[in-house]
Image (cartoon, rainbow, N blue to C red):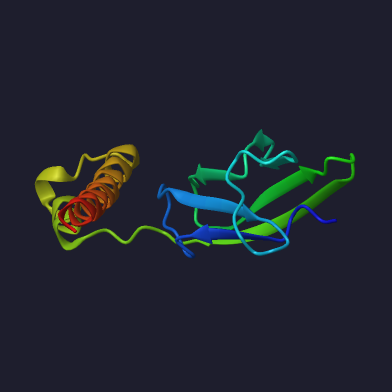
Length: 134
């Protein structure tokens, strides 16, 4: 019997640097729990559920491999479309300020990364708060 039913990920269209959860599902469509007897790897790393991040926009390939308990190998490739980060108005204002003309590309990328991480952290905190309130 097949080990890899389907591969799902969330968010569906992540931005550069955003964590993406990859889950390998069995033939029944349910995600494995990383405790299955079969070997499952994502991009060569063992585990049926993993978080990945991508450094560039565009279509990114992820290779899923598996080996059933009877030694039959399988593989599947998924394509995740990663979108570029759109700088927020405050970040654009910092970049456009003539006083910041000397900012390097690395510094601008860092400002955008900070914006992304701040939004991600706030989202996670809100989620944790809501989970504890309920």
